[in-house]
Length: 64
Image 1 (cartoon, rainbow, N blue to C red):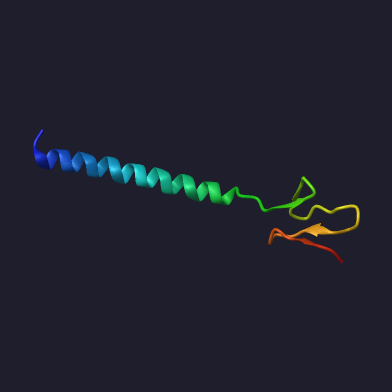
Image 2: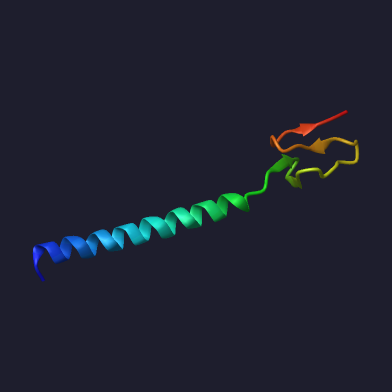
């Protein structure tokens, strides 16, 4: 293989990997869900505790 062919091949592989990684990262971020921790319990956004405190999108538990 000539030097130009090697450089072209490596460039194509590198661009392909970057596109795959970026595509994967974007889809991963779309599925990220905010959660709150409360006494070893995981709450999803909108989930309420018995005292009416609610898990908010910010990751904090807010009480009325």
